[in-house]
Image 1 (cartoon, rainbow, N blue to C red):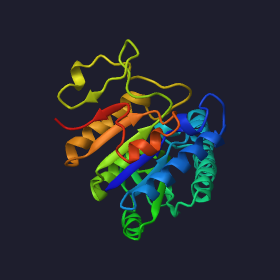
Image 2: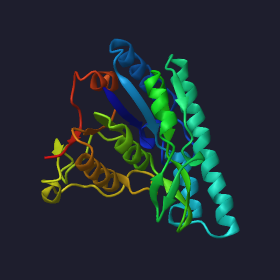
Image 3: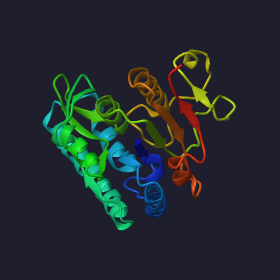
Image 4: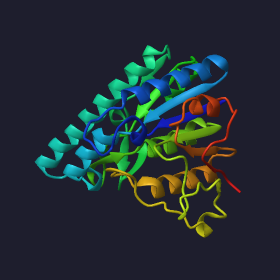
Length: 262
């Protein structure tokens, strides 16, 4: 079973403080992922992570998401890529410390976008890594864009593209909240294309700086994806409670919000 798991920027960084890596949270998450993989050797994983207070703060400063045209913006484009890579290095080292055979893939090295949409990215090396029981690692990054010059591609956008090629059974999106919340602050247990319009949820925004759209964008992308990838289930939850990530990967609990096709 192939599972994509995203360690959200709001989970592994403090998005309210520039370049604040939550090392203890990341270490616990890594240990739980490694334990789940040991318990179930058939579990194939692709891990992604957000940029949190690293990439998002720099991207907001330069307006990178909306396009890159002037020399100062191109300098900003490079800065966003650099700080996103710095966080990626911290995540990579933490995952390797717990014994995971992680192989890092830099999205901007091959990604091409147009109008802010990811159109292509090298998939075959990632497929080869999975076939050899390695754990590919991707992350939110910059990309050259045929219309905007440059832009930001979120981890969800990367998952969206890769899922259509690799057909995972599950996608798990982890953040600082325990699921998609309604207006009363209660977790919405199930979202489908059929009930999306009738659910009155507090989807917009996120705590701290997020230039890629917050929860509303994540939910809409995942609704679109479950309509395209047969049998795919997406689960949004916090991963903040000890043991939660491992238990979810092993199918022992069903936390947060489930997104699936009708």
